[in-house]
Amino acid sequence: MRRLLIRSAVLAPAAVLTPAAVLTSAALPILVLPVLGCEQERSDTSAPTEPWLKEDSGRGKQTAPAFSRYRIQPDSTLAFSLPTRTHKPKGHLHGIEGYVDLDLRNLARSTGQVTFDLRQLKMEDPDLASADDGTRKETSRSGDSNTGDLKTADAFHSSTTLEALRWLGLGEKVAAGEREKNKSAIFEFHSLRSLSHQNSSAGALVKVDSSAKEGAYRRQVHATFDGELSLRGFSVKRTVPATLLFDIPDKNAPPRTIEVRLRGNVTVPLSEYEIAPRGPEGHLISEKQSLLGKEVGNLVQVTGSLELEKVSTAR
Image (cartoon, rainbow, N blue to C red; front, side):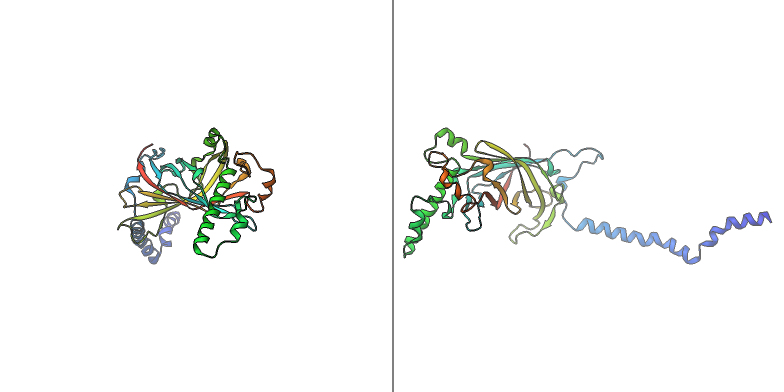
């Protein structure tokens, strides 16, 4: 009797596996293998890969930096405005130079510097024109001919640009040493954060222009630049949210050009840099302080994008 019980206990597990269960168990690996093969095939062909950016094979090791320098292309411009409820003076920043040292394997380690020659800014609206020089009143009575209108517009722009330069401490009678100190705004950043993708090769694929070379493609990465904006002797920490668009000629080459597109309005408070109504000599004009917040906004809002081109593979 005891032998019979032991024998039954040994055979019991086998009795649980019905013929259908045995067939299912045997077929499972056969069914899974094609699925795995399909997944592998899809991942290999769904997007281009960049062999030039292959990660180091050693696990646990920090990836070596792969810095490439990209320089801002000449004639780059950014738009700016100083809106209030009733006015919106605006213009463009010219004379933009600088570079970005991108670590294409780890974008967070990227650094760079952008310099704006403020002497080259141009205003487009008359909202900064001097209230006491008669320009606004005269311009409101613009001539009937197109030529007269164009001359009036030029006078507007010249007057408002001159007034903007005075606010920046770049008036025509400011001492040369002071003008030299105030001529530039410099944004220097030391890292990127809030990255949508850690490196350029992982960025989202976006549509390229129809004129692009066959095999070329574009990847997109959202990021925030952390740095300082230095202007008029003051240096204040600033963050700049942007989208980086990498133009890659083919899968065997690193990005040739990069577009840095500002996301939304990048704002700069005038008060943090003591930008206010000033005269030709650079002195504050108290009777014009009321313009701030009424005709001229307290914040500069900067929009646009910069194109950068690869110049070297190392710092």
